[in-house]
Amino acid sequence: MNKSSLTTTALTVLRVIAGFLFAAHGWQKFNEFTIAGTQASFAQMGVPGASAVAPIVATLELVGGIALIIGFLTRVFAALLAVDMLGALFLVHAPAGIFVGNGGYELVLLFAGAALALALAGAGRISADAAVFGRKGSKLRVLA
Image 1 (tube, rainbow, N blue to C red):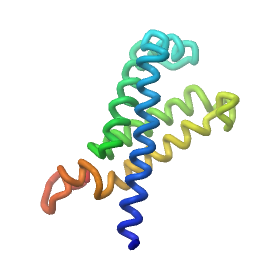
Image 2: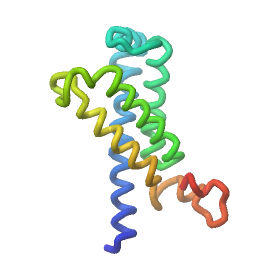
Image 3: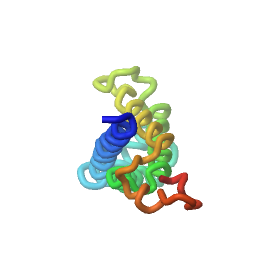
């Protein structure tokens, strides 16, 4: 395998796994916790504007995760998801230390890093972005 093939494979693996996990967390906020429960949880954790932020975060994680899986608007959704995770890190998890078992930030930091890597690198060749925006001369090629 050449370096280009390895990079394509790595980006695809990262994108699909991160997308699946983000989508699962968004789905959980809608279906297991419910939006009302997520709002209450966010308020209890001290998230500012919890009643407005909870449905936005749940939607971003669900829709953004699906977008990452198919590789559509990857840089945009990945950047938004990175900001989402950094917000969770600084607003909620940082005081608890590193380990997730203690409510710490290790998982949200890993999610933020994966999202940031995708925002910087893009979706790769096996993606909707490459198919839609990847043509030479396209003014939106930066999205590919």
